Length: 225
Image 1 (cartoon, rainbow, N blue to C red):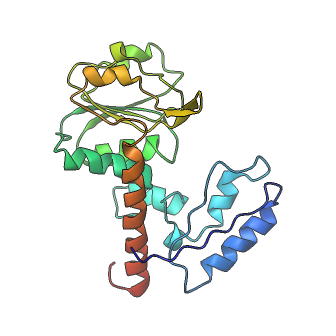
Image 2 (image 1 turned 45 degrees about the vertical axis):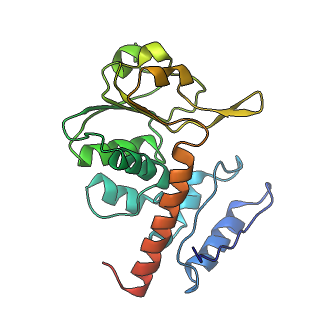
């Protein structure tokens, strides 16, 4: 797409001051339009403090509290690329969202919570659950749209999916050296739409990062509000 990318790979032992110093430098560069922080971070780097050091106007993956706050208020914002990709899949496949019962399994600020907000903004009735939800299967079986981002391989089994449900599996886990999702592939036989792992939400996430990159670039040029 013609996007120039610089990778700043730091030592795993790097301290917070060095990371925030780098972010400050990138924030101040007129040649940099978007910044993405790769996670997970080493244990000595609190994610919240690293994110707080990021300029929200260059927040490529929509993880800064400013952008997440705008999303929560239903205002225009840079949205985390992974849930934005999930929504794009639903829209491209013309899945009926308005009035649908949507269940989001996972509550991270990177995927689960913003996915719930995106669905709510399109008039779905949204339930957010997680690995500590009591009788989880009874909740997932109510879903017309089931979005799973729990970080547990094959957490959702086929019998936890109502026939005809749309299943968006954001999970990326590794078993025996191979990537597996949070949903057992056998659930695909019950679902009306099922995103596989790998090859499902991942490529769309990458496309949404490019969409966010273009949006930030246009904003920097003053071409959009």
